[in-house]
Amino acid sequence: MNKEELIAKLKTIVKPYIQDEEAYGNLNEETDFINDLKINSANLVDVILDVEEEFDIEIDNEAMEQMLDVKSAIRIIEEKMA
Image (cartoon, rainbow, N blue to C red; front, side, top):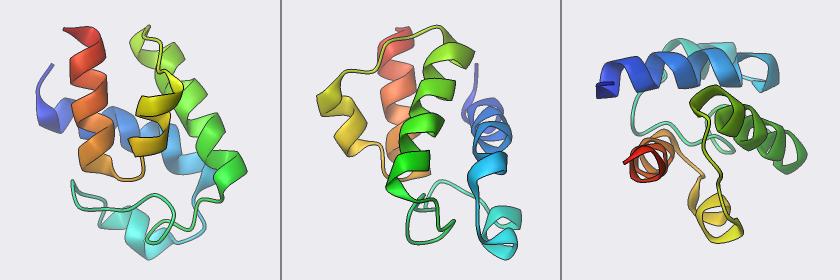
């Protein structure tokens, strides 16, 4: 799975939780889940659970704490799938 496919899947996963449509429309590797998309911390946990389910991976607490933007989410997903 390439980076573009990962970003597309992430975009689908975060859609129900976003508060900023414009930032969502411009979602890229640099997009921050909390500052740009205005996803609150409780919903960020839901996003991570959805990511685990979608990619059939387990994200530990350490990785969860790092998963604050699209770039780190992609890195963590790729590491867990490797």
